[in-house]
Length: 396
Image (cartoon, helix red, strand yellow):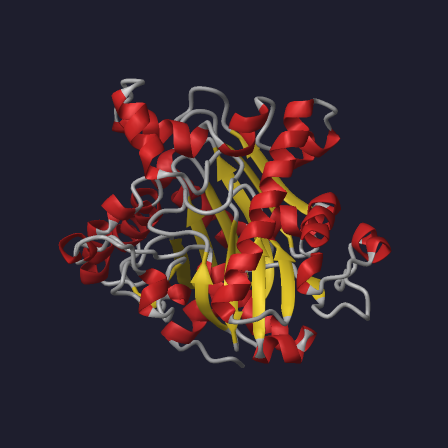
């Protein structure tokens, strides 16, 4: 029976999971998959490290498995798969660590209470992230759990990069720029030296482009500025999130449209972004395949904002030595990368159109002043690394 670290990313109606071997020089992926629709129509799918399907299961419409039932099913599945897997620890992705948590930590009742107190800062994510932690603490109190934070990587930014120009009485309540997708940026920073040593030691902007999108400026592998702020709705337009928005627009919607806080929340998180602008889809693949002018404009707005933020982040880093694309859209949507690079030619970026179309790791010409890379991210592996480090599992 092999020792494994289970990595969980829990949402409101789904749980994504990965299982990594606990020993060796690097945690090695064994299985990954998801449980979706856990409160309405549960479905389970698992694949092995090669991507081959291992098992699927559907419970049928109207079945309420819930987080508790999903965790129980997953534990039974791991024990029964192959020769069985022995859980030695569970690592959790938690969106918000506030100013208090600057690195991964082992779960204790005090840690859970502190994270629960941060729920007002991430009400759409934090409560769901904490559910499996509480369930496992109750059912398997002897099993070590580790929490890893999307905000922690950005806590070393200069104070001016984290502050809003608001009265201190509000800032002291935790209203500041936190930045997110930190586990993704931390992973890219960890592998960049093997890809481009000069960029790793210098100034790099990483574009994490997916259904949730953001960008981060790294100097010598450390975050110095990011596009997301107090919440994960700030910065770039995303699949359904609006991104940067003049606060006066919120006041207008309240005063002139009679919208309350919950209606505005629904609009800016779920009905805006690519979906809201195009009126067609939040999926970049659908927009790129569409001839509808609204789809083309949504793509144009998206790439314009990326290129504009690239200039801003280069200014924050005081220069640019490399650009990295990552995450679902960044890794797979060649037309998006092309449009961004064309708009950023003033920075010294020269796109190699053929390399970009083929999805090669380097998509800039050899003469490009700023090299451009496509590097797949791996937040789950980053969590597994942190979990193993915190619990002290021997790398043998």
